Length: 320
Ligand SMILES: C[S@@+](CC[C@H](N)C(=O)[O-])C[C@H]1O[C@@H](n2cnc3c(N)ncnc32)[C@H](O)[C@@H]1O
Image 1 (cartoon, rainbow, N blue to C red):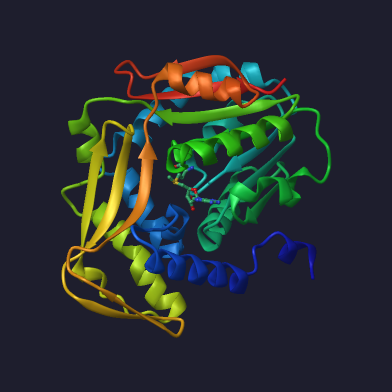
Image 2 (image 1 turned 120 degrees about the vertical axis):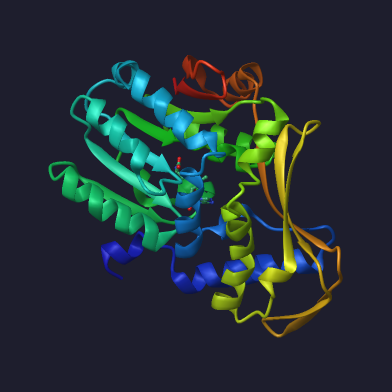
């Protein structure tokens, strides 16, 4: 195996995991599957379109906070840092950070969507020719097993923008932060968090008028047809997203509208009208709840920046 190939989750293993998890989702009630399966090349392109939608305040708000305060963030991070980005996607935000940092030592982008992150990294390499960088195409919830930690570095910084942590269950978020605080010891984590706010704003952000979020949601089933030879009719599923204030999360579901007989990897399932698949949660945080969780998981929340309307926050979590 070449060193390059060692950095990639073997596509066959990724497809097998998708198949196992989708079978498990269809077997159990209520049906639910991890949101990471949205992100094949098509899903990543749809997500890029979501980021540019007028209703999707998250990306432009986080970018504005970064633009305004990146000098302070870079000063806290210090010179010669190694940056590891989780769920790196298009690498737009890290450019602001790299531009502000004093002599960054190395950059690693971790993302499950291989074609997308590799193309983004090729563009980044062209623009930052002196910076050593690599992409790791794998699941960041397995972060301790990834080759990024091979060689010790005195100041390793995690970068986790986009409020992707909101897609974890509270237990998964605890596990992720606890592992990160251990692996980033001596450095820290710069992390973007979507804050609780007017439910109408949240509702609009996940129910855009152009229907891009609906297409993103349905791509999960279209992907299953492409990669696993399933026969879902994605158009027969309604996109249903709403804010659940008790759980402080936006939930996304696909609600079947017509009886379908699904073939998947040699198994048969009947999906009835009204039967739903829970595809994503996006938890929202109060500044207090997030800081408490970060502290519990071993970080010291040392600085926080917010937009004037207090929609989105970026935290600097020092890992002692
Ligand atoms: C909400 S998007 C955020 C993208 C980008 N960081 C931003 O701030 O706009 C989530 C990103 O994480 C990646 N992702 C989701 N689940 C993942 C997982 N379990 N392991 C690795 N990458 C994952 C997706 O492919 C996608 O690029």
